[in-house]
Length: 75
Image (tube, rainbow, N blue to C red; front, top):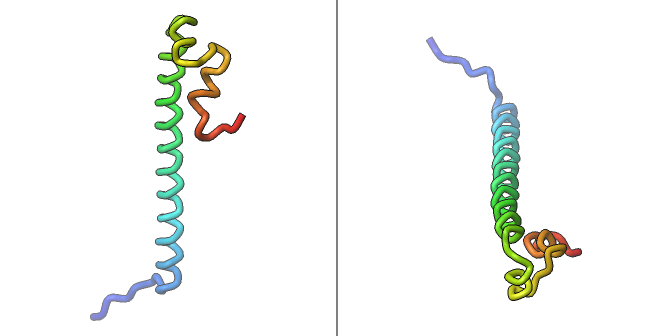
């Protein structure tokens, strides 16, 4: 007896493509979360510094967030 497959090559390709897109989307979301979590720690560390320490770094307290996100926010 011969085994019969019910998935045509086109359906199999579409299913695989859809799964790959979903996995890429999930990976991108996880990367965004990890990146933002890391930046939150940077912001907290800078906020814990004194104004004098920030000044030595060339920062003011109101520019901490801009400094941390300077590579993606052009403000």
